[in-house]
Structure formats: structure tokens, C-alpha cells
Image 1 (cartoon, rainbow, N blue to C red):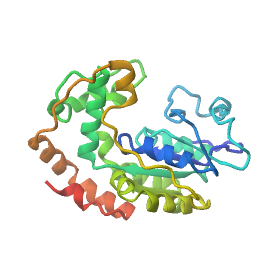
Image 2 (tube, rainbow, N blue to C red):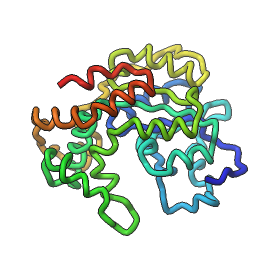
Image 3 (cartoon, one colour):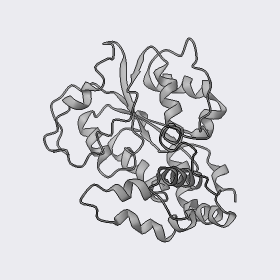
Image 4 (cartoon, rainbow, N blue to C red):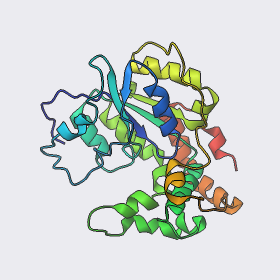
Length: 267
């Protein structure tokens, strides 16, 4: 990846992972006066159609024009950790970028992802199929848009260790902050204090109000579907299958991040 002469405007990203409380985390951080976060996911560094040998960052940075000169500027696009080459593009844009990565039990994350796609009408197959034979769909050719990979990567996104190792190969460890959605939900103030130290800003004078990390229905559900599609919870067999599938990766992820992930291994 070619390094370009450019003074980057964006200095931190919530780069992962999807369905791990990143929306709530973004809202919490946006409540700090020293920070400015875009309200919506930018999806810039996962755009494969961009000429990444000569990228034009102006349209991307225009999204943050409302930020004050003294604010740290960031955004949330949780596919960045997972998407091929996104981290390389981020490193080329700003080698000093600070990356915040929220993780979730990968079996629970996969189900939440499947439930979202089912409610959106993109998924019509059962969860059991989706996490087994349905995994092959991410390789379907769709004219280079990779829509199937975005929608049906329920299992693949949960193999965190390889994604984290790619990040650590590109950025110093001190530029990465790892947390879990349960950690955020269980100790919001403590987590935000640690994030403030990571971002090198003062602690919150007034903490944002607590909120449900995972609301029962997404804004998409409420706006576009009226009554959300009812979906069955994962079977005990599916949960056990995924826990076994992810076991080694969970252990490696714990070693890489220093997080206590033992609860994820419980059957």
C-alpha cells in the first residue's frame, strides 16, 4: 500500500466488530466535548472501487466538516477489521490511527447478524443452514460488489484472531484498544474512563446516560418493516457447534487482546 502525503483529519476509528455494541459505544463517545464522531457509518476504507493507489480523501473528510478544530475526529464502521485490505488502507491514510475494537461472543454475534439479515429480507434460510452449508455463499460472484460476503459472513466475521493479527502487523499495540460488549454493558463508566486514557483526553465530566447495548429491534426494523419478522432462537445444537468451531480462535483472541473470554467457551 502506497503511503501518501496527506495531513489526516480522522484520528480514531471504531473499527469492529459488527453486532458488538458499537452503535452504543459511538453514541457514548460522541457525548464527550473533546470528540467528534460521524453520526453514520462512513464505509470508506471498505470501498474496493476506489483507486487506492491515488485515493481522494476529500469526500471522506467532508463528512466531518462540522468538527471543531480542537476536537479529535473519529467514526464507526465495524466492518473495517474484517474487510480485506481495509486496515492497509487505513494505515496508508493515517499510520497514527487509533483503533477501537469491541468484540462479542462469536456464536452470539453470528446469530444476531443472521437475525438482522432475516428481518431485512436478505436472508431466507435457517440459522442452522446459514452457519454450515450457507457459509459458501460469501464466495458467490456478484459483479465485484461482494454483497454476499457482507450479508452472509455470519461465521467468518467471528474468527477474530486472524483479523487482530493483521491489525497488529500494521499498527503498534498501543494504538489498539480492545473491549467486549459485555464489558461495556457491565461497567460503562470504567470502560469509558479507559477509552479516554487511550485517546489521551480528559475523563468525562458528565457521563452519558446508560442505554441498552442491544435494543430489541433495530431502527431499520422499526422504520422499514413495521412489525419485525419473528425468528427462532438458536438451537442448543447450533450453539454447541459454533462454540466448538470457535474454541481455538477464542483462546488465541484472549491471548492477543488480554481480555478474559472464558465465558465464551461455556457450552
